[in-house]
Length: 129
Image (cartoon, rainbow, N blue to C red; front, side, top):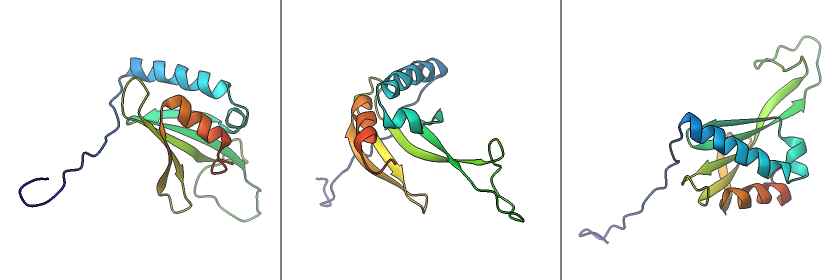
C-alpha cells in the first residue's frame, strides 16, 4: 500500500511484436490449431496486431432481395466475424488470455494461461461455437 492507503495494481499490457515475431507466432498458432478438431474447421483467417491474435470465422449470409449490407460480403455470401482473441503478455507465449466477443462488441476473458492452453480451451469451450 502507498501512503494514502491505495493499492497499486499492475495492469498487463500486450507485447510488441516485429514482423519476425509475427511470422514465428503465426507458425506456432497454425501448428496448435492443426492439433484441434473444432477450431481447425471454424477458423477462416488469423490476424496478428497489437500483441493480439484474432481468429476469424465466416458465416453464410442469406441474400434478401432489396437489402443492402453495410459490410461487403466475401464471395457474395459470407460475413466475417471474430471467433476469438488471444492476447499475448510475453514472447515465450506462457502468459496469454483467451477472449470471446459478445454481441455488444465487448471482449470477455474466458481463460488465462499459455498459448497452447488458450487454444485447447477454445477447442472444448461452448463459448466458441
